[in-house]
Length: 145
Image (cartoon, rainbow, N blue to C red; front, side, top):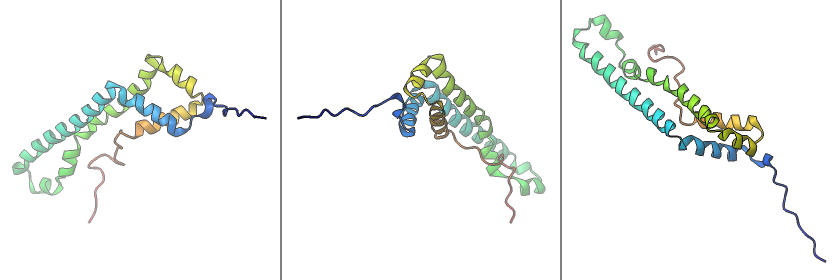
C-alpha cells in the first residue's frame, strides 16, 4: 500500500523578514529616482564641501589670530553635507510613494499580508544606503584637549 504525501501548506503568510527585505531591496534599486537622489546627495555634498572649503581657505590670509585659532576645516568641509541631508527624506518619500502611485502596493500586501513585516523591511532597506546623520551638526561638537 502506498501513502500519498502532501506538500506542506504554503500560505501567503510564509514569507520571512529576509524574503521581504530582498523583495523590497529589488524594488528600491530598480527605481531611477533612487539612483538619481543618491547621486545628487553625493554630488551636492562633495561640490558644496569643496566650494565652502575653497572660499574659507582663500580668506585664511585675511583672518585675525582669534579667527585662525577658532577656524575648523572639518566643519567647513562637512558643511556641504547639510543641504545634501535634505535629499535623504525625499528618498524615503519617493520609496513609499512610487509603490502607491503604480499600485504595486496591492501585490506587495497580497503576497505579504502582515503589514508590520512589510514596513520593517522597508525601514531596513531605506536605512541601508541612507547615510546616518551625525549626532550633532558639524561644528557643534568640539573636542576639548
